[in-house]
Length: 256
Image (cartoon, rainbow, N blue to C red; front, side, top):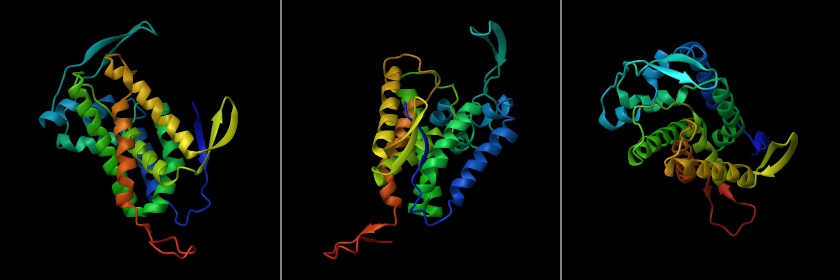
């Protein structure tokens, strides 16, 4: 796989305050509210639980002992906790929490690289609405795929991956030839976004086929990634203030 580490920002005209804010909120929630992943009671209370979204009811389950085959030890896994807000709002709260440092770091890297370009194009307010809408659609994609595939609907999901997938879908549509710097086997090369993000979504689809086949997928909500990416790809133009101008003048291309 290609690991993006940067892209071409030479045309950026505004400072991406909303993107900075989103990154900061994700980090602060993980460190202070989730206690760097140790506060499982908070995490299990505000994550998105498919059964709760489908029924509108708050589910509380008992803790259970789980055996870790890698360490050979047992540990207590908390059950679902009471959700002090309407359960439908967990579609939003779940997208600001993460399962660990690696999960957080990977998501924030992608948001840092691709989010500023989309905010520069859409503007601050439109970008925030676009991000939250893509994240919500991604969460619902996971919820309904869980229902259709008859998987456990009591397993909570969380993370900014779905919303960031939407950002990447919008990026692919708006900037397919934009230069993206990636690391491949210890070497850094520059490739067009079409290749970098195209390979990423192909990997999500192929990996997600394990879900369709009834296999475990390592706890990754691939349906949310795919749903978010498609949402971003299809919806970004509705938020885009840049309009094409029909003119024969080659020097006039577009207006805001």
